[in-house]
Image 1 (spheres, rainbow, N blue to C red):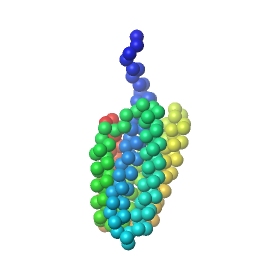
Image 2 (cartoon, rainbow, N blue to C red):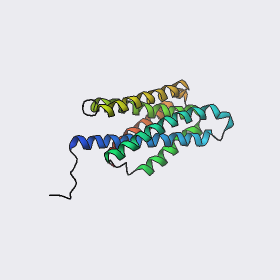
Image 3 (spheres, rainbow, N blue to C red):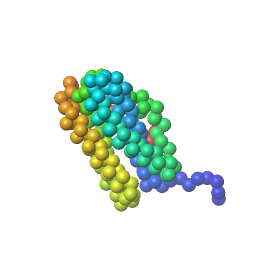
Image 4 (cartoon, rainbow, N blue to C red):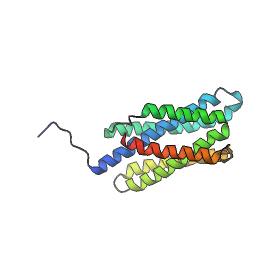
Length: 183
């Protein structure tokens, strides 16, 4: 019997979900940083923060390229919501940048807090079945922890309304993870 493609098993389906959500997350992170830079790049007195954001964005671009490659190699479709993640990420980045440097850094700290925990859970789940992918996820988690530390050192917790802003962003990230796994 030929013709019908074999349906992936539960482990393969789970790995596909992981790759899809990780790709979506990195895509969204790049959009957030682009939104922040859209504001800060236009303000000469904000050159330092714009440069820091550009450096973090470059790291996220590297992660995104890795997940682009992995999606193609494993024939996993990306999230269907990429246009939404792009618009939401850019909007979040621009809005928090308009609120000021500390609010932009609060957004970064909140996003990276959720993502690094997500990556830690994934690495533990992948460890035995997909050790190379687990190592990639662990490496990216370290990068995200570095971004979070940069944001905290830049005064993220001093942003106006930090607790509320951070809670809303974290909740949005957790929801986006669940949605991107399936859609």
